[in-house]
Length: 616
Image (cartoon, rainbow, N blue to C red; front, side, top):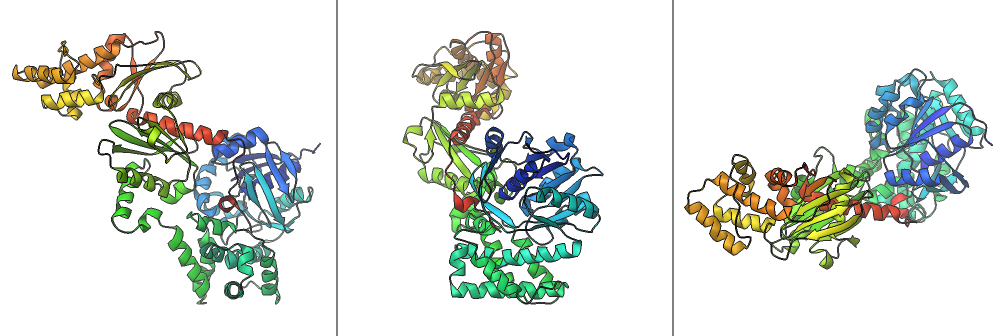
């Protein structure tokens, strides 16, 4: 049984680096809390622990697993480790400011030159340490790391030597479990940072641009020559920074890289998958310091600019001509948070729900927490297959869609999603995300009216539909309003100013149009006509079966554009009728959540090495 040492450590970012470090700290007797944004990964860790394979073999359970940094505030941490990508660090630092105490020491366990500078403005130089990681692994499962190598030692040091005791204590903790780590001073720390970054910069972008594994790149004499030149440029710049390497440094680098194996470096994986990269802290920093000392870094500059050109722009913006402009408009219109970049969404696990209704097709994309990030509406009646393809193409161009679900009238003939479900199940799933428990759901769509009844477990136990006539539906409402010369968008506000109590005598669209014309010819005011139409629909819905004693919610496009209907129905049923937020999208939202559930319930997700490989 391990001996507790009383040291409390928080780790933000549980990729391979964070997972391996978390396990070793737990083995050493630390109290470890881990935090990540990937809910699926966290769920697996809570249920099964973190599993290490290959170089290390262990399964470690964690009881402090958080999706928000703020949840770690009550722990009063001794150390806080940042083991995430540099471009995610600023946001994490802002969240972590609430954890700052006099005793807290923060550690940048990341690759690249000057990444510790991302922590210093918030926590101060005297509280900041840097760790040089000399281990890596591949994500085999969301909670499983196949450790590919550990080339001891790791290094750790205080960036200004104010926390040398904390650095030594951290190293001692890891050494107790044979995870060799050396505590070094700030000058040696800078040298080790440059050494590691030159290694990363020499091969990572080359592998990404050329779609080469490390073994393939090092087997080709032409690419080997490029690697040597990139290393030489880095050495020349480092020397201007008063960093001296031994004469055999280049030879040792080449020997190390030849052992890299037949897999892709982490930065190369990001390039291949069109994700944001850390190139600014790799080759970009070598270029930056080269300019400072008037040293030419042509190859590092070339690879920096190539990688930026390939990854920093939205995929859609690189599409030629009209199609690219159309896709950008679709994305800009549908994005819920306009300030987020496409790169941000490529890093999230996202799920797509498509509701192919009789009048409109609705698209909803959610993130791993179930939050909607994109909504889009497309008229179905135009039967424009190209328009549908353009929306789907735009969605996949921006979002990392892991799983998708189609529903609605057109679902059976739609083959571009992973699964299909009925709109009854998807409607119930969507409402249940907001309102759990037993409920009645009224869904007035383009061509039908449905009443769903859910039990306490949110399962649909009964549903009822109107007869095959479209009376009382969205199509009926639009036709009658058009004949009366009333704009759909104005009907609710008009009806609210009327006390008229009569309804249409006929629900047949043909006869109802005639009746409406008689109202118009009789000089009936528009507010009375609007209210009379609504009363007719409310009376039809009121005849459908509802379970008494449980809440009633309304969804669908009709209630989205005609909210006054809920007032009339509340009078009919003698109770409050609640309208779900964004009711027209609730079925596609439910479909997206069902897609998420299916993806999370897959027992053994197939590992995609290209997507998740992590090395030096």
